[in-house]
Length: 152
Image (cartoon, rainbow, N blue to C red; front, side, top):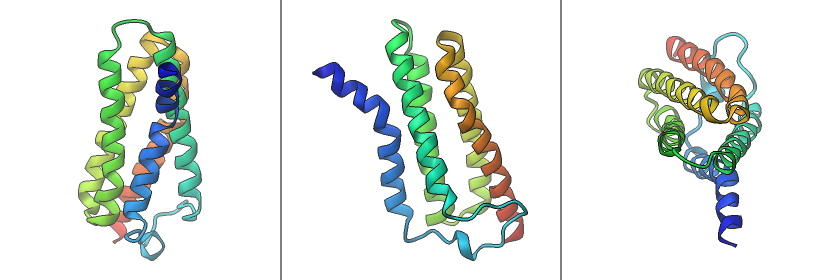
């Protein structure tokens, strides 16, 4: 039973964090009022994409934990650190409206997700592959973040 609960935690913790942050930021989101760069998506796309990414992130970590039997403390630390940095970005961008700082923060997030992906790839490649959509979305989100900062 303990293993089942741990596996459920691994799978769904990112979704839980995303939901909590969504609740914290929901009244502060001003995306529709901002000037946006070309190729900006409609606001309805964000919760869909992030839910998929959080689910992929949870699956990646679950598979990593299940298939790597030792020496995984560094990867686990980086995983939870990037998740923490991810959660704070929404607060920085939407609640505090620190648009320039959020640019630096999302670059920091991208770096840690890249490090996490590289670390996963050294010990269990399928987990790293599941992080690729996350990296691609973060690259796009960084473009949007920079564009919003410059236009507002």
